Image (cartoon, rainbow, N blue to C red; front, side, top):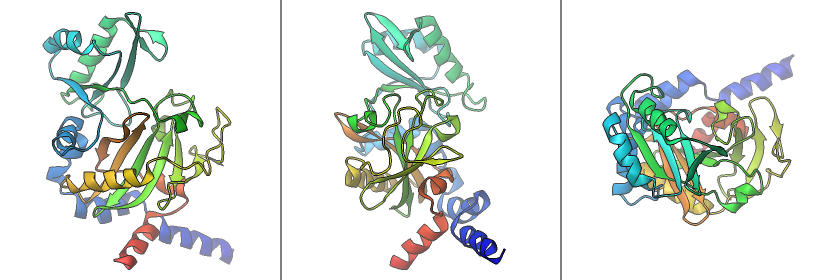
Amino acid sequence: MIKIWNKLRSIHQQVMGLNQRNLELIYPNNPKRNYKYADDKYLAKEILEQNGIACPKTYACISSVAEIEETWNVVSQWNELVIKPAKGAGGKGIMILKKQQGLWYKGGQVIAENHIFTHIANIIFGIFSFGDNDVALIESYVRPHPCFKEIYNDGVPDIRVIVLDQEPIMAMLRMPTNQSGGKANLHQGGLGIGVNMVNGKLKEAYDGKNFMKTHPDSGNKIEGVVLPYWLDILTLSIETARHFPLNFIGVDLVIDEHLGPMVMEVNVRPGLGIQLANKQGLKSVIKQQQSKS
């Protein structure tokens, strides 16, 4: 019984809970007036693009229903597009489109243009952003680096790097599954995979219940795979943090097979599941960082 109690106390001393994250990391480091620069993807993209930080190209921003058809006639020249709400969260409202022989496909199924227009209108009406009026962003599609296809050949994995005072302290790879429908978000069924901060080597994957060394759908190896461009990813995370008026953020990045690492978005309230993915608490990581400085 004493051993169990000591183990539980040890875990508690390392792992950070939601209230503690808010009180010790978010509130002291992120002035509320500056939340908008991360919460609004349109404003975040402006900061990224103005400072030359690699990110998916913005083709258009649609803020009113009257603009939809005219804007679509311009952006439909590209064969791959991503439509997303500027104020959306958790991957909601993101639509990935690919064109073949003049037809648009979503998830392998043909989708009519009027359905695309309806989706854009729903974004503008705030369906995916808690009822607030929103802006629909239309961006270039990211073609994932081949290393990810060797694990699971669907969707776009992303890498979240937690940055405190412009110092990367923890990271995880978010990998899609059949359950998540190609999306990398953990609460939609994606995997959280811890990353060694020194060399970018992947740890075990966590699905919310169990740890695993291989992908549950493909059966391909996860543990031990090394992320390409790891030093570039850390450098890009630091550079991003320097240009945002927020001292504690989650920087979400992707690796394009041709363009390399790019920043997708910035999160002012990064979730705590990254601790489970790494089998390590933020408390202990921050303590280690402070002891070095």
